Each structure stands twice: as structure tokens, then as C-alpha cells.
Amino acid sequence: MTDYPLFLFPSGVPLTPSHDWTSNESKIYFDWFLSVKDERANYLLTALDENLTGNAGNDIKRIGQKVYDHLFIAPFSNQTENGIKITNKGLALAADLGILTSNLVLRSVPKLRWERLEKGKRHISFRLPVIVGFSDSSNVEPIRFSTSGARAILEGRLKSDIWFKFFEACLTK
Image (cartoon, rainbow, N blue to C red):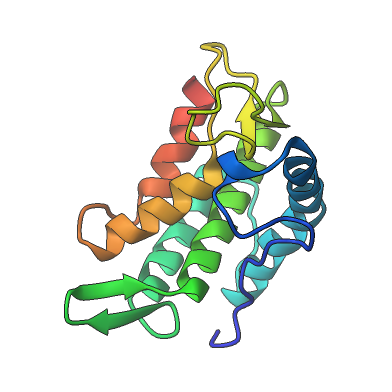
């Protein structure tokens, strides 16, 4: 898995925080994201030699454990003076598990959908793809959740079940 593909933004979207993007740049990113998300989730499954079994919870637990294990080895992390740090390939791996998890959430709860968050410029997910349609009117951003979670795993603050917990939480919101 040393050649794991990076999660690179499409042309037309600057490498700046999303709250600095224009609405048009946000739309370009959103459309690109929707066009690549299934391909990236499928690549993750292939790279891990995995298949979905139809039991989403068990699939997320099993695949989450594999990603957890991979996060601790090169090229997904590096040992530094300040501890183990995630690499860009590690972030891509985590992002793809966030995508796969969100795909399983959307299959399990058909009323949920992807939208661009265009309100609340101070919201951390402003202008990014989020899942909406929860009964409590909240939204979730699986990519940020997953990449932040991967960092926390390497810091020893979270375990391999974070993606399963995210999946379960989305089912009960």
C-alpha cells in the first residue's frame, strides 16, 4: 500500500481553508467530491483486500481495525522527535475510510444526503460537503471526523472503533 493515492483537491479550488473559498470554488469541490467518493471508497476496499458483507456495522469494525493498524506504519505515519505524526498518505487513507463509512450511513438511512454547508461562515465545515437530514437538524462532516480521528489515534487518544461509533451515532441522530 505504499502507493496509496493522495486526496488532492481538483483544479480551480485553492489550497486554503474552506471558509476562504468562494461559493463557486465550494461548488467545484463539492461536485468533484461527489464524482470521486465512490471510486476512493472502492480503492480503499481493494487496497485492504476487503469486501462489504452486507453487515455494515461489522464491515466498519473490521475495516476500521485494518486502517488503524496501517496508520502506525510507513507511508501512513512517520516517527518524529515529537511522536508519531500522520503523513499525507495517512490522511488520504483516513479520508477514504470516512467516505466509506458515510456511504454505509447513507445506505442505512435513505433520508440522509450530501449538501454543501453554505450558512454560518464561522462553522468549521463551512463550504464543505456534509451529511444532512438528521432528525436533530445537525450535520456531520465525515472527512474531517475521520482525519481528525486518525491523528487522535496516533496520539493514543482514540481506538480503532471510532468509525464504528461514528456510524452508530449517525444511525441514531
